[in-house]
Image 1 (spheres, one colour):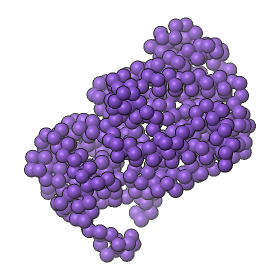
Image 2 (image 1 turned 60 degrees about the vertical axis):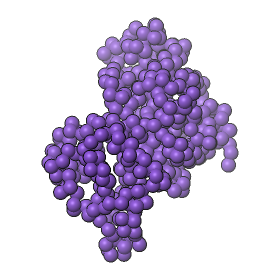
Image 3 (image 1 turned 180 degrees about the vertical axis):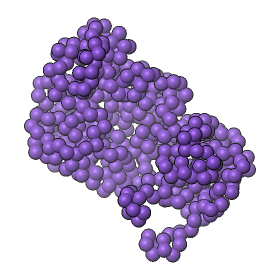
Image 4 (image 1 turned 45 degrees about the horizontal axis):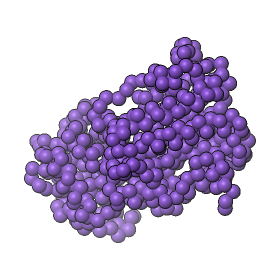
Length: 458
């Protein structure tokens, strides 16, 4: 939690941006795993945290712009709550810590919003959909379309521009994330199970006082972009891909990826592909600056990958034409990066068209359509850079059968890589007034030599 002045100022700016009406914030509730009293770890709604800072369940809030009122709705702890959970301050005391002087019982919320112009954000939990139906009479199927665009855009613009105190929290998360990746490099060897790596890096995140920022990806099958299964045992010759980040107690996130050779050294084929991917990463970083559209940065990385693939005989023809057509997506079918902050994919529930595109339409082209960030970069933006190269047998077979991109793709040569898997490396960056800065005071090894040196250290 930041100082109450931070939250007061954020709410003041929000009121100025939206202008009028009643702004509704739904906090999260505990979510049962298999029965009511056995819950998942609680995670507060990030926008609620951003403006109100209170990190516990059973809360909602309203900002009445026209009436100049800010109210937190919730209930004081009962004696049963205290018996089971320990001594807890009353709601008014907690609200005062974030500069809110007015609190009301949660039962008063429905009456307060009835008949008023209510701005709400797109719901992403079933509990929010139920509450919006009860409070506003809007059926779940209609709620996303009815969400307030002025409210969304105001929140997005504020949360997209990270302040110095936010950046400090993110850097703490990135530093813990680096430790997670160093641990992977030190422990990966033939015979180790994916679940062992997952457990070890999760423990590091939790020892830092927070948790993981998203389900850990720890796999020898890197061609599956979001592989959350942990069923394989690493074999000599495999590559181990770890995509994992820490979330600190304030809930700001880190997000890093590393690909490490299980045998300790990449074979010749792996090293060639790794170096092509690393060159794409460096090409993207060199292009980062205020005012540069991130879509252009993404396409520079795509071009670097296509040039590398052409140099080893997997692509042919004009590289720029191949990228414009989308042929590079055979190897890089996803986006270069995404915004990051209180959410690892920051504000994804508010819509990529607003967060990453500033209201402009997204491409429908395979590969480009998965790009979460395309808008011109601005000072204060925090995001990932994570080019990857993936050989997905099902994609190879489908495109070949369909005769796609035969002017650019050398299918016979590509087929020899169908057992390769996939790899990526990822770092987190901040746009500054005059350029960019890699986040974190600790450095995640990026080159094969750096990773080998890190793996040898205790």
